[in-house]
Image (cartoon, rainbow, N blue to C red; front, side):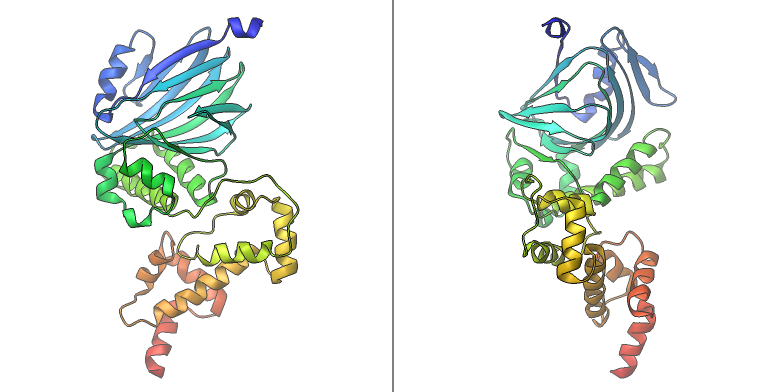
Length: 338
C-alpha cells in the first residue's frame, strides 16, 4: 500500500518529428540540455534519465535513453490522431521486469523486447521502483516508409495493418532475431556525435535495413517452452528454408519461436538432422547461392546482398568455406563448362 502512494503517474502525447525541439523547449525547466552532445538529462526524487538524440530532418528521430526509477512509475502514451508516423522501440538492457499494456494485452518486457506501433496507439508502461533500463526508440515518418521500404516484404498481417491503416495496434516481439538486436545496439552506439552527412546517410541505410529485416519476419506468437516433439526439428528446418535470404536469426529467436529451450533445440536438431541449425542454414543458403551464380546476370556482389549479407567479403568467405572455392572462380568454371 505504501508503494502505491509513491507511484508516479505520467502522461505524454505523441508528437511529430518536426516538433521535437519545440516540445523539448517546453520542458526546458525540467531538463538539462547539452546541445554539443545532443543529450538531455534529468535527476529528481522520482527518476533520473539521460537520452541522446539524432534528428535526421523530418523523417527520422533516434532516441537512446537510460532511465533509473526511484519510485514506481505508470506512464501512459496518448495517441495523436493526425498525420501518420511510427515508432520502433527496443529494450536493450534492464535490471528488473516491467510491463507493457496495450488494448488490454499485457506484455512482460524482457531484455530485447521490441515493439512497433503508430502514433494512433495508446499504451501504458509500468516500471517498478529501482528499475533501470536502456532503450532505443526510432521514430519514422510515413514518407520514410514509402521511400525506403518495399511493402511487398511486409509479411505479418498485424504489421501490414499498422502501416496501411490508422489504428491503435501494436506489434510486439519478445525475442527479436540476433541480426536485428545487433543493428539496434550499433545504432545506439552511433547516436551521439553522428552529425556529418556521411554518418546520416549510413544511419538511414542502417535503419532501413533493420526495418526490412523486421518486416520480412515470418513470426507467430511465442509459446511456452515444452519438450521437443520428433518432428519439431523438421519444422525448424522448414522455417530456415524460407529464411535463406536473410541473416541467420539466432538460436534464442528460434527457440522462442518454436516454444523450446535452446539446449533442447540444439540436441534434438543434431539427433534428427545430424547437424546444427546454423550449419543447416548455411549449407542451404550456399546451395541457393550456387544457383544464383549460374545466372548470366548475377554478380558476386548482387548475390551477396540478395542473400542478406552486409558486404560481399563475408559472402565470399562463407561460400569458400562451404565449397573450397570463391564464388568468382566458381562462376568462371561454370562459364568455361558452358
